[in-house]
Image (cartoon, rainbow, N blue to C red):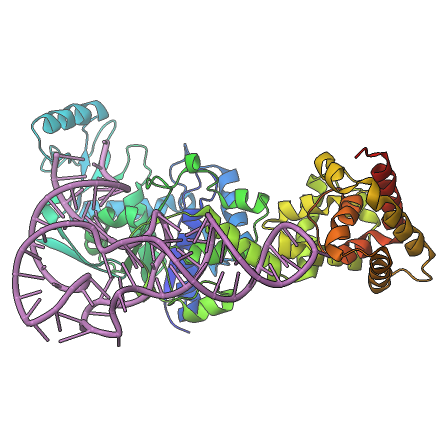
Length: 473
RNA sequence: GGUCCCAUCGUCUAGUCUGGCCUAGGACGGAGCCCUCUCAAGGCUCAGACACGGGUUCAAAUCCCGUUGGGACCA
């Protein structure tokens, strides 16, 4: 057991973004690999944008992909007094000061600075005023060091140097008494004993400011590791206009959590040429050394491929229960009830190698679950022709006469009939398939018959034969 | 505008630290062939990249400098 402690600290302002899941995943894997702790903290101090539903979505999303936390979820809104106390401590120490500049004033001066081509940082008007008991609106600002430089030995990016003269005197406590993001993270990371801050590189520029605060507060510095962003195909930050970005959406689209994890972990991390990893393997092999510095483009095709891979190799029993809600969604909720567990697993086995998502699997299940088929007209025209009608009839008769109907018995009958009709498998398989399923693509014919059972097999073949007779050449 | 980060096939990446084994490997996607009762799966093959320019060196994808391009943060 190591003393490594990492955290995932999302803001509950919407759904759980897959970029967030990847950050959480890297933290979680690092913790599990090192035998450390993974802590969940909800950064909800922006009350106008935080919602309970969003918090729930975060918890649900993390649970769905199997990222469990050892401590938390902590909420920043429960800790407002802690931030206040620390902020006041900085004031006492002389590391912070009251600022009474109004938003309008700040804005005006910023525009002025911009016009002159100067850096857009706080101009320090209140810095030396020494305001002790502000009346009315006042925010507390951190007195950032202006000399020297701050060096970060980043676990991912390597050595990053910032000139302290670029550091802004950030507001740490707003006039409403709430802490700002950059301040509350520092207080929390320190008080929760976080040893490694692994987060998106959108925070890299904030890091020197945070380091200054850690130091002013006398806290020991954690190590930092900044992960590159995930981008859309147009190389801009991944957002809703690139398609689905919430984990929940992927669950609803019939993706498996292990596919999501496997896809996300390879977005920025690698282990030689290996593409497919189980969770256990990841925990064993993960390390920050092989994390990519550059941003990665989200590739839905590869995710789909992984999903198909896990569907193909998944446990039928588990998949059968996972596909259930999707069957219901496909309108098969009621009809599927009359089938046994074994039958459902058989259905999954027939379909798992030919489906890329659970939705697709449910869609493909229709001809086997439902009583009736939807006949694909062009397939019928092509394959249900008069010539095959007698063979279909014969097949139906013999299957009906079978003392015991089974997959192997059906196969035997089928082959005998082919032989006596002087037909090749290739000539008769498609007509039979169209009659049985309504379409031209399906699992193996005898698996199909097995799933349908004698009654439906025979009646569908008879209907197919009737249809074939009607057809005019 | 200022600061910071990044740069190998269309995409994810191996290789970069510790230069030579790289006429740059794998995967997704694409094309083709094989297998085959269809669809998949699988097997095989093909096309496809070291951003550019300078250096250092016997030797550079790998080290250094610059340029360009992309991204992020600050408001």
